[in-house]
Structures are given as C-alpha cells and as structure tokens.
Image (cartoon, rainbow, N blue to C red):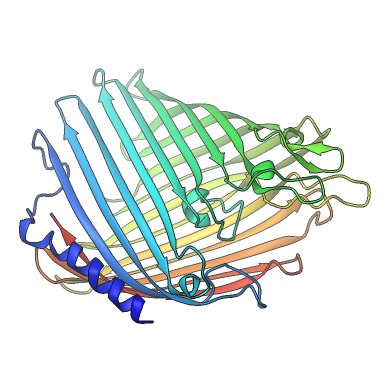
Length: 419
C-alpha cells in the first residue's frame, strides 16, 4: 500500500509543475493558432478490474490515473483544422501485489478538417484513433462489453460533402471507415480468439436528399450502404472462419432536423436495415432508428437524450445444435445526460446508458444481454490554473448467457492543471 501513495505523490509533482505557466486561452478563439495543454491526476478504487462475474477472477484494486491532453486548433478564413490527443496511464495496486504488470495505457488521437469551398459547398473530415482496454473507448456499440487486456486499437474516419443546390434543396454525401484490431489472436475453432471473432474493416457510403421546409426545419430521405469484412483469417467455430461473418447492409430511412428555439434542437431518422450474411446464407431485416435532442435550460446547463436501434457485431459465436454460429446482435440503446452549473465554480454531470441486445442465430438466438452504465461527476474550478473533480461510475451487464454477467463500481478523486 505504501507504494501506492508514493506513486501518487510523484505523479502530483509532475502535474503541479504545469500550474505556474498556465495561459487561460480557449481553443478556437479566432487567433491564428490556438492551443491548450492539461494534465489530470486521479486516484481511484475499482471493485472489479477484470469485469468478471462473481468468482475467483473478480478482483478489486486501488490505483491512480495520469492523463495529459494536448489540443490544437488552427482557424483560417475558409478552413479550420485541429487535433486533440489524450494519453492515459492507469496503475493497479492489486496487480503489483500479484506480481503482474500493474500498468495499462490508452491513447486517443482526434483530427478534424472543415473547409468551405464556397458558401454552397462544404467539406468535413474527421478521424479518431484509439488504443486501450475499456469497451466504451474501443467500440461504443460495446460489441465486447467487458474489459479487454492488451493494446487493442480502433480507427474511425468520416468524410462528408454538403451541397446547397437551391435555397430549398441540398444534399449530403458521406463516407465512413471503421477499423478494429484486437491483440488477442491465434485462436482455434474450439477456443476462438477475440481477434478472430471481431477484427474487421467496415466501409459505409450514404446519400441524403434534404428539403428545407422552413427556416428552422429540414426534412430528408436517404440511403446508406455498409460492407463489413472480418480480417483475421482465423477459425472461429467448426467449419467457420473469420470471413464467415462478412456481411453487407442496406439502410433506407427518412428523417428531420428541427430547431425549436435557440435552446432546443432535435434530429432523428427512422427506417429499415437489411443485412445479408452472404457467406453464411442468412439475412436479417430490422428497424433502424437514430434520434436525439439537446435542451439548454440555463447558461452552462443542458440536457441531452437519444435512442438508437440497429445491428452490431458481437464477441459471441456460440454455434447451435446444427453448427450455425451467432452472426450479430440487434441493439436498442437509450442514453441521457445532464450537465448542471451549480454556481460559477461547481459543475455537476450525470450520464446514463442502457443497451438491450438480442442475438441473431446461434445457440443464443433471440436471447438478450442488457448493459447498464451510469456516471456521476462533480468538477470544481479552483482557479484559472487548477480544477478538481470527484465521481462515481457504475456498470452492470445482465446476460442470458451463464457466467457472462458482472457488476462494476468505480470511485475517483482528482486534480487537473492547465496551460
């Protein structure tokens, strides 16, 4: 235990050294170059560091997190570009005591480029590269709902071109690539690896036809095509390899975007998703929904809610009696968050998410997992240079598969220095 507090003290010295040189200048303030550097130090307690079901693998630990962040934005006359990099180092005392590597690391690099060719033609490009172990960082659809050891990485690249053809009619053409690579590889048909099951390359193209019905109202209809190729080339079940899960989807949808007031906006699309698992001679047709709304009820205080419904990948293969494997999940996800400014220095945040996922095909066909997550945070601004925060995170997976469910509670207390 003494090692834990010594480590906390050493990390705090490094964080405090940033304090004196702080320059309170927000990102994107119109200067030729805007930038921000910060470093966060948190101590935490995690009662289930392996996200394991009750049993010998369920371990708790004290630990600490060190997380520096760099953000740079370059606003030009018709172009804005920037980057944001976040590094995370996580130390677990329990692993140190067990003679294991006590340190995990994560990386997140976000890049963006917005360019207006003319007042009618606008391009937006974004890329997000992530390396880590937590499921929400690697794949927000939680195709793997448990923590995964190793340097697992994912990349999401998105490009859109928006064109105003007339005052009432516009289009959006888009492309997105998602790439996932899990370190755990070299599996067999009897014991497939996570890489064999989930390493994949997803490519999507879409076209939205948009009608500006009123000044604050836009309606649209669209089509999206997605091709998913599983890339590990490993056996995942008897008679199946990674590519047996290759599929293509067609989305047809309609939607609207509405600015009810300066404080309330909402958007949504509803339609159908048809997925062809062509290497397994199966297919699914399911609803497709993506709706959200944001309400700013006081300066610095707002509420966001949303709901999505679509198919996603899963780490479960589980062949049925005939040998047919699980291909995917149909997931319904609801989320809500509130950020409330209690006073000029104190901000409270609460976020919650529920995902109900039903398995398609395989031994668990039509059975479901329900994943609950909740986080609460209090952030206090000490000065222009320093802030402090405390929080609590709760995760619960309720599964129809025996031995898959788990509970996880985390509490933390930290400080952030900015430059």
